[in-house]
Image: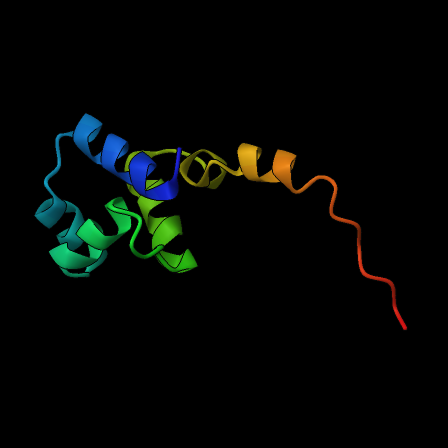
Length: 80
């Protein structure tokens, strides 16, 4: 599930409209729409506030467990 899909799911579970969520975050309704349709991704400060509004961890909101498992083969850069 993408960040946008998670925002949409959590917003609907809480019974908020896009306008309601936008007002809580001091952004436009269009910004929320762009996030939910995966056209843009919220900046980290908005992700933190969204996680607080919906009482979920950033990991759950961002689906970081999937990201971590797909990036587990990335090796650290060596200092030159």
